[in-house]
Each structure stands twice: as structure tokens, then as C-alpha cells.
Length: 407
Image 1 (cartoon, rainbow, N blue to C red):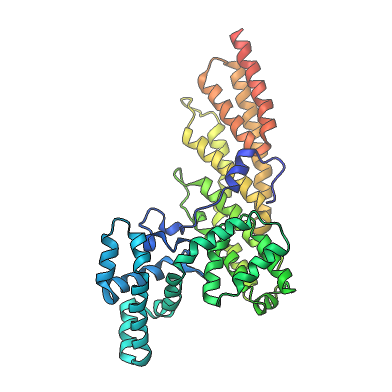
Image 2: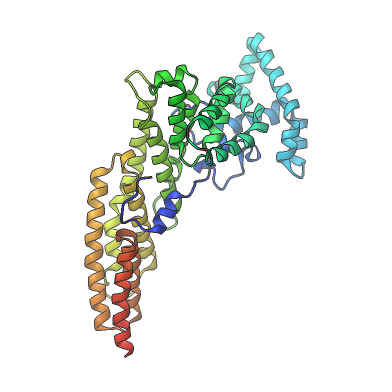
């Protein structure tokens, strides 16, 4: 990951942590199909990715199974002490019943019409085979995730290339789903794209598709798209900025993995897809960056009336600086270069000015707890913006002032 030289260790830790695989829109809700397909889910997608499903698709198929296909079987599942285990045990029977419905619809137009009505839309009907394929590979999904974790320990070269080739031997639908589950566990997705390009002796989109490695790139792009979910959180005190920072870093790693290693042409699909995702991510992050300077000034300026330190304002300023550092690290994958650099420079100027004023106020009133708290808040923000060493220098200056008071 590209890191600014002055970014502190804490911000790096936030950015490097993995983000949950569950779509942002489903956090806090009951898991779809007991969480068994979470590694394949994306938020309601602007694009259709090979191997990925949306929660809406899976929930619609589940309602169909529960209401119209096998209500007795589903009743046994939901009443079980461990529904996920019972669901896996019941899968063969559920799939057999679902396939019988599909078989009837294939030869009877009236049965096809009823099937579409029960599923809720033609779009869901079109995706029904993909959801049933996903259910077929439930027993393999955890193995695919374990394979992804194993890839993190593999050396580049023949072992990794052979592993990808072995997965490419699966039929296209199953292989794409297994790759989707695998990529979610891979720390550096660029290694997969590079290995696929070398194995196919082609770095173009057309060459990778022809060689059967399209599911690798599709899965990487799907996970980049999924990282947009946390960025959609409403701004405010309760926004999970740690999660947003991790999502920005994850988006960058996945987009860069494809953009740096795959050649595109105007007739391709992946280039326009990445351009659209970049515009979306940039549009979601831009308003947050525009608040950073105001948040710093609002947190560190002394009020004209009763002196107090607003902890919510301090938190907002710190969160803004962490996000700014994360965006600056990912700027090669975003369309925010000008705004990011301007905000980065202005945040430094704002901090120097405000921390200087806070230090002067502390010298005049070294026993004032609010003046000391304001200096401490400025030191924390400076650590994020300038680095831990700069914060240490400011802390030493603060300590000299407080020791002088004590003496």
C-alpha cells in the first residue's frame, strides 16, 4: 500500500485492517441464509459480477423456498437449535425440490409465469440459477476461504500460478463463486492478478477472459465495489470512520491490482467499470474531506464566550484527519488528487496555527485544565497529520510548560 511518509502508525493500522465481508446495507440485520453465503454477497450492485450475489436475490429465493417449494423442510431448518448446520444437511432435498420447480417451468409457460410471480420479478427469476449454484457450493465455500488464507503464505511464481489453474478447471459459475470467496481472504489481490496474467501469457482483458481467468479479475473488482458500502455511511458523530478508512484502503488495493496489471480497450467491460467505481468512491469521500479544515478550527479555537473543549468536535477533527491520511494513501485509485493535496496542506497550516495559539494560552495560564486539554487534543491531531515524532516534540514543549508551573 502506498503510504504518506508522515502518516502515523495508528492510521496505518486502521487502514490495513480487513473490512467485514457482509454488505454494509445488511449490518445489524439477520444474516442472509444464516451467513452461509456472506462471502459471496455484495450490496445491490450497479454491476453484475461473476460469482457475486446480492442480498435481495438470496432473500427472494429463500422466501420462495420457504413459502412455495419446501415449507416443511424449511420449517425443520428454522426450528433447529443450529439452523445453519441443519440447513446444510437439508440442502440436497431443498435443491432437488427447487430443480423440480425449474424443470416444470422449462416445459410449461404457465408454470414459468407463476415462478416469476412467486420470485417477485423477472430480474430475480434470471438470477435464480446463480443462487441455486451458490447453494450447491456451500460445502466448498469455507475451503475456498481457507485457500485464500493459504495464498497469503505462498511464494509468488509456480505454486501460486498452479493453484489458480486448479481453480480455473471448475465450471465457470462454480469457479467464479469459489474465487469470490477466495479473494475476500487474500491480503494482496495484485498477486492473484499478476499470477493469472503470467499463467495466461496475456495481460489484456481479452487474453485473460480467453484463458479462463476472468473470475479472478471479476472477484477482485467485486470486492472493490463492496468496499464502497462503508463509504456510504451518513456523516456525523456516530459514523464508523475506522471502517471507512479500512474500506478506502481495501478499495485502493483491489482497484490498483487490476489497473496496474491488466490492459484495457474501449470495447472491454472492466475499464469502464473501474472508472464508474472510482467516480462513486470519490463522490462519497469528497464531502467528508471538505469538512476537515472546519472541524480542526472548530475543535481547537478558543470560544469567544465560556471556555470549553467540545469533545465531539475534537473527535470529528481526528476522524477527518485519519480519513484524509487514508485517502492520501489511496489517491492513485481516486479522482481527488487536487482536493486531497489542498486539504493536506491546509490541515498542516491550520494545526500549526491552532496548536501554536493553544501553547501560548497554556503558557499564560499553565494551571488551566481546559487550556491543557486543548493542547493535548492538538498534539493528537498533529500526530496524525505530521507523524508521531512531531507529536513527541510538541509533548516535550507542553511538559516544559507544565513543569515550569509546578516549579
